[in-house]
Amino acid sequence: MLRSGRLSMQRFHLRGLNTGPSIRPSIDCTAAAGSLLSGVPPRTVVSLISSQVLSRIVLIVLFALSTAAATAAQVAQLREDTAAIAAGADSRARRQAITDALSAARIEYRLEEFMFPRFSGTDIVVDVSAKTPAKTLLVGAHYDRVAVGQGAVDNASSCAVLLELLTVLKANPMENISIRAVFFDLEESGLVGSQAYLAAVTDKQSFSGGINLDIFGYGNTIFATTSSADGKLAHALETAAKDLSMPVRVVEPRQYPASDHRSMMNAGIETLGLALIDGKEIDPILQRSQPEPRILTIIHTPRDTMENIRPEDMEKAYPVIEKTLRLMDET
Image 1 (spheres, one colour):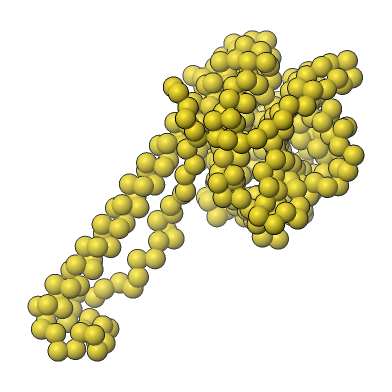
Image 2: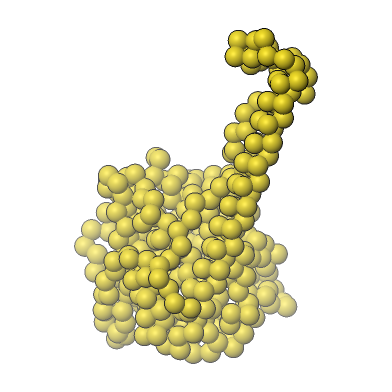
């Protein structure tokens, strides 16, 4: 499908819609209207009240339709981006799919080639400035894959979510926190791209925090780890997940599967590692029990294809990431 530009959408939350005080279906409403309705015949008052009720109903229906349309559009965009990246047979093709999406969204990027220590690769770096830049937060996701499968769940899905995040933040920047997004190369070769990127950063303390996304293609629970259980990022994630009614399970880094979050932690950056899977899979992952949880029968196998992507789940989990960032922006 020809991309003339990415779709940036506002989310409408009906629970936050102020529909005003309830209207009592009695002539006492004349008193609530005050002098404005004094002397107006009762039938006219009832007619006016009925019109108000109807207007509110119409407004609520329009909001509901807008929400449904926005949700459907975002689901379609996440599916499209994941599929485009997953179609790439190697890092070069996957990188091209990401840069094509960035260009379509008119988001500037740069390619940073590296040699570390014996591997050569290319990271994709994007900066989205805050309105009044005071801090920078690092957000990453690796785009390379293993030789088998399409690398759809691991990790085209996370790249699609990061593309969505960048599009939204470009349209509606945060007040104080700028975002440095890096699509890391060669994670599957031993976290090479993230190590190379951070080794080249002279002032690692310039990052007020870091978030890494790895495996975000389906699920009902955010599986997370943090370098600091009492840190600002961990608290922001907990609050965002609670506010959005999204289950989250946080474990210690030593229990969590390896990914580029480790490079961020080793650089001394307060870090969150985030994945999206079904909650029932987490204990079997931690316990390494048999039979293997579903996710371990997909990643790094020929089954890691678009058939195992559930973009509706991705769409439901995405707001937790954005809200975590915006909560950080308020502190």
